[in-house]
Length: 248
Image (cartoon, rainbow, N blue to C red; front, side, top):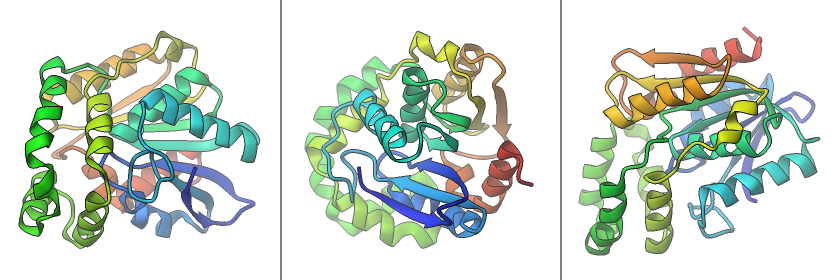
């Protein structure tokens, strides 16, 4: 598993799992703000720019990160945060090993499958994939994602680095993932976030995750779109990390 690392090695460890189609820069600002107090690891998710593995499934990506934590980090870390696809991988990690972290922050994770979207992904990307390398098209997609402007160059570079096969694979996984029953046995302190302006599937998914994990908290983020909390509001996100981990 390849990753970016920040902060002090003797500090509490924080793992940050980026969103689908993004990369470590999803959390670049957070790493800069938190590196004095935490040991930060940002894995490159399978099939994404910088990764050393093709994307096969959410389950395999999760088991690989759990294995890394067991081998290199004593089997448990202070906190794991995940956005969208990264949030789904975090949920799967908690289902596989409910004690892999003491705290968890899940942002905008979908757990209600969308069969129609799932079926359309392969044919749609068969036609549009060549356009991804066109800057005008990438910028149009970027604006639709409502990501802050200074991240465009990183977004364009790393989107171009994702193969058609991997992009289709992780998008199909994203639209078909369901919570595992084992998540109910999770011992972590879990916090769930979603933007009030996200689609109905994400909002319903957040409620389902909250219902499935005893003792979890659910926060609706006023006025925010998908992924905006961690991507566009790093200072507020870092305050939430510190509050969750008791380091305010």
